[in-house]
Amino acid sequence: MSVMDDVWLRCSACRKDLKFGQTHWVCSVSTCNRRATRLVFCSVSCWDSHVATLRHREAWAVEARAPGREEWAREQAEAAADPAPEAARPAPAPAAPTAPRKIVGAAATPAPHPPMASSGPALSSQVDRDVLIVVSKLKKYIKDRSGMNTSDAVADMLSDHVRAIADDAIRAAAADGRKTVLDRDVPRPRR
Image 1 (cartoon, rainbow, N blue to C red):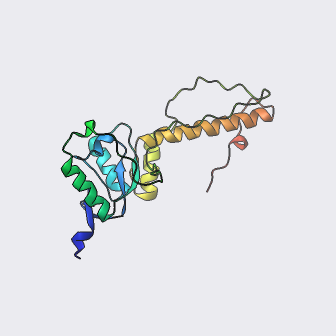
Image 2 (tube, rainbow, N blue to C red):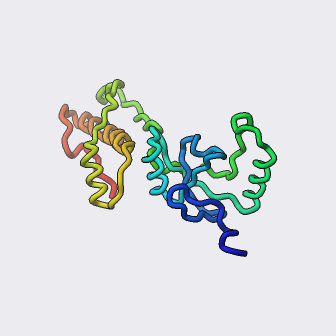
Image 3 (cartoon, rainbow, N blue to C red):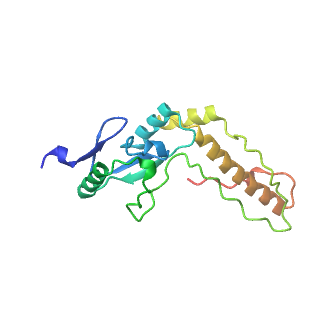
């Protein structure tokens, strides 16, 4: 058995070999996962370079596992026997019972806070969705701290976290009977 016998595909960005059964990353955008396209990445960094090139509006890296040699051979045989367009075929059943992990740039909306007791302040349901983070400062911090680049979607997610923390601080101030949010009302960061 040669080394090439273990190679499933190559990383779409850096061309590194991906072996059968190896963990890899795929793009959440459906057009990147079609049989004709089939973009796979050896790391989140390679996926990130792909996003920068294609400028997806909302995308994240999804962890996946390469098929086994037999499963891949079966898939290739089915593809050769079925030349019908992908849109005409039913969607394949999921291969693994475990759901893939959503890793980067989560597009999900944050869970709402539980309703306040009648004695607490009435928080407005009308909330501006403005970015509360100074994006340039955030990107500089991450670059200086780790040498990594930062996706623009990170600012939106951090803004949602800041809103949740501010809501908790408002509740704490109201519980003390104050109309001013103080530093002691803000929950301590996890380290």
